[in-house]
Image 1: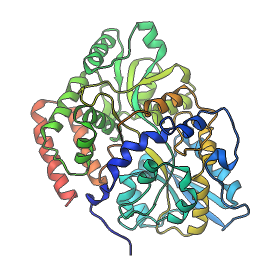
Image 2: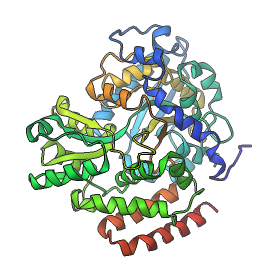
Image 3: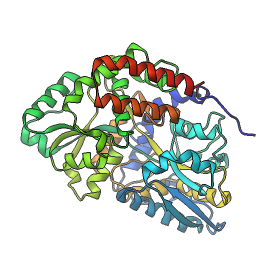
Image 4: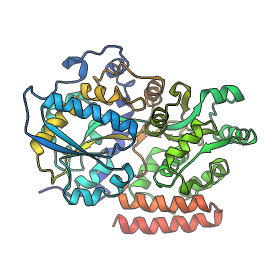
Length: 449
């Protein structure tokens, strides 16, 4: 019988896991850092963080459900699958579904007739479904791949019952992007504080630029801004407590988040509710906008898809608001793969997961991915560009790493928060903030009951 847990139980050792996840990017764990940035392309066991599944192993064919629907990650995933086929001799068919549709339908997908493997997210969002018995434990896979990952990564791959349910492939930071040429041409400097950011935004607006490209038609992108404001103002511990219903949405700390956001909104691209993030990124690409807060997994990938100069793209961490927390925390989601409990060919699926859990597999994916970074400590990725190198550096000395607003809390609560934020963006009047907070608190009470 599977262990079932309340959302509160799912916290287990999450705080310790998140505080150590920065090491997975490579620079904190020195051996992994040197390998990750190495120019070597060796694929020996020592260099790749473990061996592939036994040669000749094969158990037929599996189906792989994928949300890598955008052109750039789809190409990288295809390379991973091709190499998995060669390493395991397992036949793999891929079922690609639009990213947002996949995410919105995940519950019914896992309850119905899921594929043998599926793309998904680490941490709480995985634990939520593991606790419902919808995921298959894969401790036997981790017996073989465990040496390839540090303890922080391992913790985010476990359920509340202590069993493993997830194999990672990469992570990436959420940061503020800009074009180097724009900053050089206009004489802009990277802001270190909130006041600096507002001053820069005002200058950009007076120069005829949209200070912040912004989109929220899919509703999840704005969660990133809520997260970073909460992390900057109230710190990591409070943010995670709020996500897990250990703090209340009626708290003054949450009021502070929305008041701070209201100050920034005049400098953010209007009409966000009708715009997808890809189109917001194009506004940055065309240099109509000066900045954009989003993940490298989106913005840098879009530059590649659109054939823009990735060398002109740069980023900086969100500026300090509360000096007590400085720039110590960010969202750095970790993506990977799950084995649905209702999978039909679990033995073959586990063979593929054993391969994916190697440095060689991560390197094969990142050969075509110019925006994410490896989490296997032995991965050798000779193709890291300036964005990926900067990503490793940005995550090297963090004191806490959150996964993202729709991954750190129960899915229904994420949906409630997305809706509230969308309404706030449309009407940020101070008079509406307290009622919105009360509504969120009421919904949290029901959802976490």
